[in-house]
Each structure stands twice: as structure tokens, then as C-alpha cells.
Amino acid sequence: MIETCRAPQELRSKLDAWRRRGQKIALVPTMGALHEGHLDLVRAARGQADKVITSLFVNPTQFAAHEDLDRYPRTETRDSELLSKLGCDLLYMPSKADMYPDGFATTITLSGVTAPLEGTFRPHFFAGVATVVAKLFIQADPDLAFFGEKDWQQLQVVTKMARDLDMRVTIVGVPTRRESDGLAMSSRNAYLTPEQRAIAPALKHALDEVYDAIASDTASATTAGPNAIVNLVAQGFASVDYLAACHAQTLAPWQKGDPLRVLGAAWLGQTRLIDNRGA
Ligand code: PAF
Image (cartoon, rainbow, N blue to C red):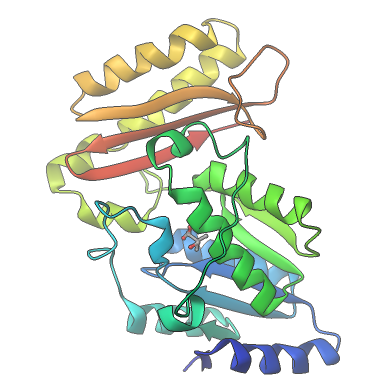
């Protein structure tokens, strides 16, 4: 069984002991319902650090009132077995009261990189993510922290926050793990009906097509995204929040010469899928 810590104080004394021994510590922040994509983060962390902590906290502040906080999949026993098998050293599962005690009044917000894409459609999201990730960094003080590239904008936000606030942690992005038909692994894929699951990989194919067309100069960034949105809806997506070519780090609209990342978010019934494509 993997060792589990529930209180920030307990976590600190455990990690202080490792740090005194000169051990390099990696943190993998998660909300649980682990899949192979999360396990890749732990594997990458194991390759670069002496000790790996995985945190599991379904962070209420990154969900709006109408979103899926209550039905977000919770599979803690299975998660802890998977982490144990992988050789993760510590599972940190703080309570809501530990993370957000009564009277909690601090929020971390970033401008710029948080504004477009997810920031437009989930305006609460990045303040919730930045605040909880900053707390986890302060509690664990890791040398390295691992995040999936599937949440590309989140990865840029966390990287920018760590830089802006002089955090000593190094942020490491890990490539997206995909199902055999290309669908990006996500805890929310569990919500898809068999019919929706069959349509879902079209998002990845659309991102690839738009990326390839812009990168090879056969389509313009302004028309390729809107055309792909029309095609996704024709293929059965209920709606598409965005499918856009962006500067890979700032997420500003892409201009010739910028590093290119194409990002998309689309709905199948009540389930929102996000994915992206880069070089
Ligand atoms: O990507 C996630 O699972 C969450 O947004 C994170 C980074 C664990 C913060 O709650």
C-alpha cells in the first residue's frame, strides 16, 4: 500500500526529512480518477526525481456552480493501488477544510494567458487552478512538478505563475496519452455514451488537419479554425466552444512566425472535450 498523507503539516514534515537527505522531490498534481495519461506523469517524474508525490484533490474552486463537481469521477481506492504499483512514494489527499479553511480569502489570478479559450468559456477556471496549484507548491515545495500537455493552456498558466512568483519549482509538460483511435485520455471520457465515444476522435483529427494546413501554408489561420468547427458539428458534436490557432506560449491569436499550437474544446451531449496539437 502506498503511504498516504492527509494534512499539510504531515506532508511538510515528511518532505523535510527527504530534503535533508538531499533527495530531489517531484509533485504530480491530480484530481484523481487516474488513467494512463496521469500514470505517464508519474513515470516521467520517477525518471527525474528521487521521490514522487502525487496529490489527489478534486478542487471545488475550479468548477462553476453549473459544472460537474458533484459527478466528477472519484476512484480513490483504485487510484492508490495504481500509484502503489508504479512506485509513487507518497499520495497526498488533503481535505477541503485543509485547503480552504473557513474565511479563506486569497485568489491568484493571471492576466494575458488566462484570457482567451478556456478563459472565455470557463472564466472561473484558471483562478481556481492557479490558487490550488500555488498552495500545493507552497505545501510540498517540490523541485519539479509534472502537468499533462492535454491541458495545454493550463500548462502555460502554471509555468507563467511559477516564473512570475519566483517559485523555485521547474514545471515539466508531458505529452498527451491517447486511445488507439487518437482520442486524448481524460477522466471525463467516462461520461461518453458509446455513440458519443465513436464520434469523439474527430476532435483530434480536426486539430491535426488545421495544424497541418497552417503549418504547410495551405490554409489561413483565420479560415481553417471556423471551417473545422462547421465540420465537427456536421459530424455530431453538439457545439464547439473554440478551435483556434494560437501562439504556443501566450495563446494570443497566431501570426506568421509564431510557434503554433492549435487548441479546441467541443461538446458531445453534456460532455466537454478539450485537446490540442503542436509541433
Ligand atoms: O489538471 C488537473 O487535474 C487540475 O486542474 C489540477 C492541475 C490538478 C489542479 O486542480
